Amino acid sequence: MDFNEIKKTWKNSMNAEPKLNKEEIEGKLKIHKDSNTALNKVKRNYLIEIYFGGILGLFFIFWMYINLSDRYKYALLIIAVLFFGVIISFTWRNYVKVRKTIISSEQLKPALIKIIYDIERYVDFNTSNFSKYLIMPFAIFFGMVIGIFIDAGNQPLSEIFTSIEVLKIAFVLTVLSVLFIPFSQFMTRKMYKQHLDELKQCLKEFEDMEDENNDSL
Amino acid sequence: MSNVALSTRDLKEDFIALVEKHQGIIYKVSKMYCDNEECSKDLFQDILVQLWQSFPSFNQKSKFSTWMYRVALNTAIARFRKDKKNTEDCVPEMPANIPEEDIYSEKEARRTLVHKAISKLSKAEKAIIILYMDDYTYEEISEISGMTLSNVGVKISRIKTKLQKILKELEYGL
Image (tube, rainbow over all chains, first blue to last red; front, side, top):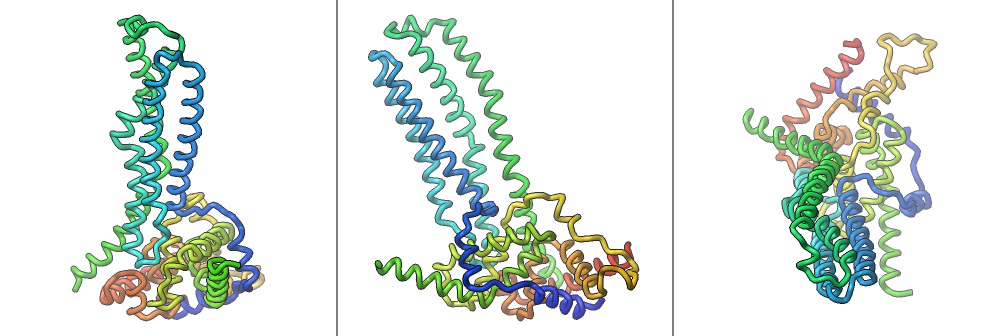
């Protein structure tokens, strides 16, 4: 089959497609369906993290307010508010940057670069040292400490944090961090790495096309 | 009714009228990047929504169809594949020699073969060849893809050769 035949066959097969009228097009726009593009998935994930973090934060702060003794309540509440505030505002800041991006109407190569950049930003955010070694261990540590403070009531700090208690905290923190942090990193990579690789491969093809042609000219 | 609501309604009407006129582009991209009906319908819907979201940024510097192709191809390229296994296997296998009484007419057999050959191209190759098969000039293909004019010519010639080679292999069951 020569190329003209291929082209003709392709065109004929497209002509056979049913055409939608205005009402049908409008109807399709009204159907709410989650987009399957990588960019929209990233946006949705940011929103889930913000909502989930916000609800969890409020619940946690309320729980602390009810259960902590007055002696430590306000200092710990301030730490909790700051902690959740930093995490949520950091996630929100990243979301706002990506939210403005829509599937680009730019040329294919620049658009691909932009999409790859946005997805990488999300993956980097979730796999960054800031997240791995600061946010997650601190969240685990803080949760444990709050539990200890609630149990301790009004006891002074020196009685709450005995050497054995500190050792216990360090042990549990290490075990939970070793289990939980790699798991969350694995999930983020699993979800996006394959797709990122595909997009990068596509970008490479565009670049290779130019390199090959430049070499042959 | 407020001016904002009115202008949004006008915008939507303009958009729908333009899409109605150029919907063939969405079909072509959906068919090019999907090998089964379900995937194709999903992609069609996705492209339509992305077009609507991007429509306010359409500045009329380029033709609507050119702009539409860019958004459609960008959407298709950036899409997560739901089921990788499906993409290769869902185009029906073609027998090498088609008996007359077979349910396939020769035309349908050719269509299936061409679609199957196209499905074997890479995402980037599909983006270039779809424009060429839709009679876009090299200048327009260069404008949509961002490749230089000379690169477009060389690449199209290579894709044509590759496509014919794949077809030959499929026809003779190589």
